[in-house]
Image 1: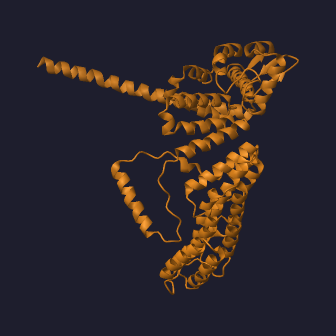
Image 2: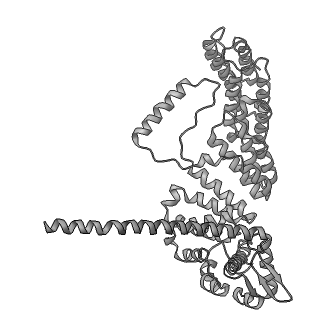
Length: 492
């Protein structure tokens, strides 16, 4: 195999190639082996003379003759033989592989199609200059296995490709490959591998681009043409400015599926917000309505922490929430420090929430996790109530607390313990006295620091008051003189 550099041919064999290709095509009707031998002799001469154009044409002519004869075994044999020729030009071999790839769909049955695919995979193995062609052939093989019902084999074959390292492959095609890998892993149930593969895609690729004026579009087009003219053969191709909305929606659909599988509600909410920031979704009222609903559902299902609280309040300020009044009303309940009675919440919002695919009152729904999410909603309501009680009470009787939370004592202790463990609230339970204390005990240093801060604040206020009093006294001294002077002027 040559080193890949395009050398100036020692001799131009184009006329000989034209003549012998026509003769070989006529000879192939009676003796195909003789036709191939005739072209092989000229191919050796063109290869040794570094005549890339003629060598490419001869290789293509040989494999085309084999294909037209219907002898697929001979085609595979010739592809292997021609690719292993000493000093074979890389560009010519690439052209041959690309042409043979077009023959795959013309194969009469699955067995012959598979033999051509395996031949191409053998020829392209370990060769960087045909890595893109190898990836495409492997994708065809994976699709065949999937159609045959062998999902594990399809996933294993496609996932062996490390397309993110392919410099000659366009970014869109890379993304499509990785998305297909993730899709197969999800169908297979390999959630860990799906998560690993999905991290190979940069979300910056899906970032929404600002609208450009016609002048900016023209300027960018000229800059792109200039870069294309100055690009060398070894440089990767420039990225095309195409619409990636379909890839973005497909990517986030997979991410949402992965987040739901692991009950990562906050991640699911973030992914839905990215879907929301898509022009096609914003312009479609039905899709916009559905995505807005799910943004709210998954943020209120997320366990409480600083990030969740901040995102919840930002979502609450979204003016588009007026399109979904029930969800907006439910969201507002989580933003105010007031108790929510679960029986009332369930009765008021339950019938509406059951109509979605997110929640279900029973385990009989199509989504097995829908009922789990309904139970998690109840947990979030109770945890919200515990935080509200901790804000307004320093000590409270257990009986009164269970009444406020609509729980029995065991469940109350469980939820308080979970929130204390998560460091959301501070609480101590005195079981003999049946008292819950939410006041955090402070040592002498903390009390002294608070007193010192209070005194500093008090002295600052006193200094401010003294300044204002002094200012008023000075104004009072000035005022009578002005009035007196005014009267004297009036007298004159």
